[in-house]
Amino acid sequence: MTATSAADLPISTTAARPPRRLAAPLWVLALLLLLTFLVIYPLLMLVFGALSDSNPVIDGFGKFKPSTKHFLEVLGNENVHLAFFNALAACGGGTVLAVVIGLAFSWIVVRTNTPFRGFIAGASLIPLFVPPLVAGVAWGILGSPKTGLLNTALKWMNIDFRFNFYSMSGLIIVFGMYYAPYVYMFTASALKNMDPSLEEASEVAGASAFTTIFTVTFPLIAPAILAGSLLSFVVMLGIYGVPAALGAPANINVLTTYIFQLTAWSPPLYNTAAAVAILLMVVTAILVWAQQRILSGRSFATVAGKAFRPRSLNLGKWRWFTFGLALTYLMIVVVLPTLALVIAAFRKFMFFKDFDALFDMKQYSWVHFNSVFDNPLTMLSIWNTLKVGVLTAVIGGVLAFAIGYTVFRTQVAGRKSIDLLSTVPVAIPGLVIGVAYLWAWIGLPGGLYGTIWILALAFVARFIPDTVKALSTSFLQIHKELEEAAWICGRGLLGTIRTVVLPLARPGVVASMTLLFVLAIRELGSSLFLYTSDTTVMAVLLLDYYEGGNTGKTAAFSLVQTAILAVLLSFTTWLSRETTQSARFN
Image 1 (cartoon, helix red, strand yellow):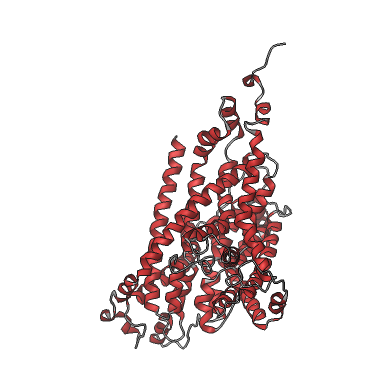
Image 2 (cartoon, one colour):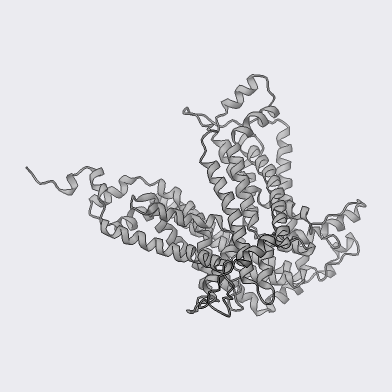
């Protein structure tokens, strides 16, 4: 009998026993401990706060006074009931509008011959990158009942109608316009994968194109519509910026603004805030579970085994009408708010005697920008934001790569637990993450609370599901044989990752870190409870300007934040493209 070398073994046999198998349990344990530290521990402390009568600032965690009174107070508090009802009304109405807009856009882009569909598809995603507070501020400037630019224009045209975006209808409209891209992304993908022969059969049977859309097309992509709707609702439910800008002036509280008010009172009601935060998290978790159930269903399969090409409906002259609709949406969501911010930022006073006063150039100056940059906090907040963004991108990118590789490229025991823990933050709004981290660290020694690091760690925990999901495609596209060949050649596990997996997954890694960086730059909810005067970030400073009542300074700093975000987006997009091209040619 001759000896058999490792190289003579079948690939599957060699792959079945990868190098350093003994290190696998320690690696899984390390990831589980890290995710526990980032996600589970803060959530347990949030529950601790809701079920105790201890003050984390005064008592620390040395004294535990168990009490359910805060939960009972929350369940019986009429203000909580009203905030909960307002949240459901604003998010529910916004979701309906988002479905209408997102579904219309996906149909226009995927199923019609509307001109410039590529431009429409790209531009329709712009609202995703607009910070919610900036959107709220801009529409407050446009739709203020007394000084709103839209109302000034209507008065000049002698039209007896006035906008009031400081209202429930204002919240619904802004939510619907800015979160329609979530519905678009789900439904556009479903429309691309749907067999057009199903629609053709309907038309052969005598149904009109309009009837076919509502009796065949949209019902067949119902799971995608429902999934996009639930995602939009969940995201809206956890947003603080828009309700703070448009709801607060009208005394319309939702759950997020009510939680912040509880911690802003004197003395702060941390325990009650924790109880309301858990209520918000439970509602969000139920909706996320419902979305996952819908996505995992198979009863609406529309992709056949045979090849097909998605059909483009010839709209004839109507294609210019649909193009006009798309441009109108982009004008309303992108151009109008930007114009409002520019006018408010450069105008000395937001008072217009008449419409002609809008064009009086003597009333415009750089005074608000000078005031903004004379404030030492401005440059400090910009620097802090960039530092937090870089830390979040690096730490989150490395952690997401480790989680993604373990979950998608190995068969080690415990990987499903890692996948589960890394997915938990999907059901936790950013504001709840902030409250949880407040309870987790404010009463403990060690100096983590009040530093840049706690902001970065909260952002990593908040966005780790998005990052892992962004990386999953890159991992799934790499064939297992490439790693097996490296093992046969004597490469260890780390060597294989460094020389094979990482270079091939590099575009996905850069894209996920770019996503983390952008999300960290615009995040407000998680920052509200974790910043100090030394760690103020741009989103928090913008909120301070807004609550100070100076519309000009608020608009000026909104433009500064938007400009910085646009520059960073352009740079990171270029970097991601260059990395993708480099990986392709190498």
